[in-house]
Length: 223
Figure 1: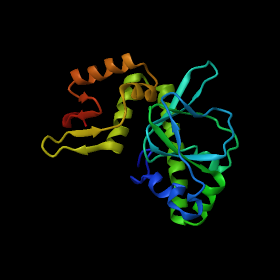
Figure 2: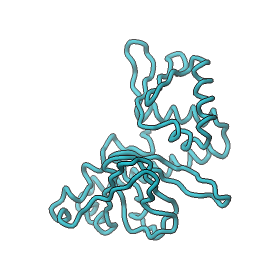
Figure 3: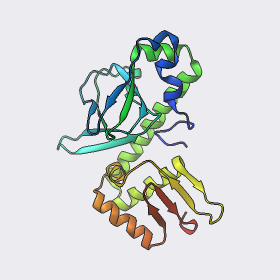
Figure 4: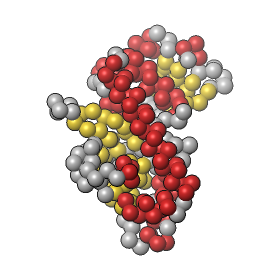
């Protein structure tokens, strides 16, 4: 199964952005955000869908205790706010830029419905990616509730392997080139950056992985 946040390696921005279509091009603009800027907050009106031209966006919510829960960190080419397509009227999450040069393509829900109606294949892809996201979110929440931090990290590494990994023919290792910082990964598995660093070094000492910035190698004998 493909990852929740990707669908068939399709860059949705490239095929969806209204500036590609004559009917919408003249009235279409991009929105720029700096690091920590919010695209929308919980309880905001859900009347747009968003595509990432460049940068990174964090999707999450705040628990009743006021703790931040990160659902996803999305990168260039990805779609968010998509539940508005299904009739959501208020946001149940926030979206925040975590890059200093994030560029977002906002698409009105009515425009999105028009695009989907005119392209049944694309419409199918959108509904399928929504389904994958819901399934993976449920799985991730179960991990946060019932698994320890090391197990959550191992599960996340397995996801990274699916999304970004390839086989090294020379060694047989799985090599992962990914877009996340250690802070991103810590947020996604619900732990602190310092705890993540300890866990990564434990896995390294156990000869399970070798890691450096934006690359993780999973050794053949542990895969």
